Image (tube, rainbow, N blue to C red; front, side, top):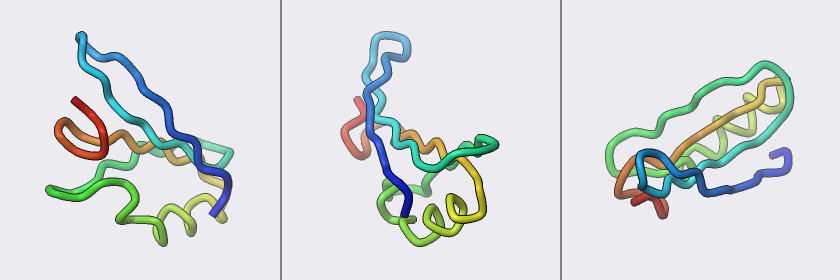
Length: 66
């Protein structure tokens, strides 16, 4: 997988963890119920290899998001 970075973003006073990987056109990647973006490492790897920039926030209550 290309280099993965994690950062915190404030949304309406709450902290949201966001994963970013790859370069190119952005793709917003939303995880399913009870999972985090880490669960989709294979899919993210394939997307970044195809030249896509993946932006994957952890939904509220998951992966460090408030």
